[in-house]
Image (cartoon, rainbow, N blue to C red; front, side):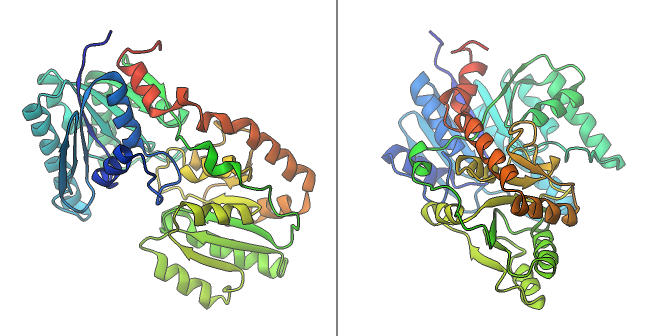
Length: 396
């Protein structure tokens, strides 16, 4: 038997109060395709008999106290970049630590992006175990920053992983490798997890359309420059010139670059080639997956991915993925990925042409998708299972 613990979890920007209400009612969050990480935390606490306190930095203040769980949306106080960003990170770290002290937490679990890791060092003096959960890598694979400030930040992070953290949970092997590189000597528990999905959501997804012209390529995610959305416009433009009417794109999502992206599509007269769908709820998003032949994830070298959720969704739909090493998926999903080069739209266009021209290659990639699917359904690869390992309720 493991004694009941008091676990404080500082999550990312999602609405954790809404997530808890859905979890307790047993209803879906239809804006999400996967099972939420917060929901997996709630489930772990219930199963293991622990008390939980979940905090997100969602923008609307709200708090709910219920039985074994406290959930709170606690926005960061100074949104913005530059010096304001770092002050905000420091203030948020202090806020989390004060809550851990007042609530008498035994363990503090922190998602990447919540604050600068080294700012949490006082938790060690307060005798709190600290667990890091990495949804993103510290730097884009192959593009480690060399600026002096970044070097100082990485040195502080290495000290944190070496001297403060008792465990790290990572969503990809690259996340864990970079932590070990920073630490030099990481002696805590290291475990990986994968996003989890409900099998029933994907059971009815048909194979790709038999007609391969037009060859439909889908993007799903935040509409931001560093997600490569403007590269998609360049790819679409070049393919339309080379193969008129043979390749089309569906872009799903919302974000700060939406207006500029739409203007770029209109300026190049690509309205009939690139369709914008906005942010979709789960059933509508799955319908777009069903209508496409492949999925593109053109993340650029100034964004720190962990393992994009959209890639897992594509694999579960049996759709090959066109991406670069920056997605950190090539190792995890070997054989189902059509590899392109980072920041090189021409290589993405060439990859799409190969999939269009070579049916045998396309079907080979699709077959491997089926092999990789189970890890995204398997409870043993969930965040709940990772917590089981970290807190000693299952073997490492």
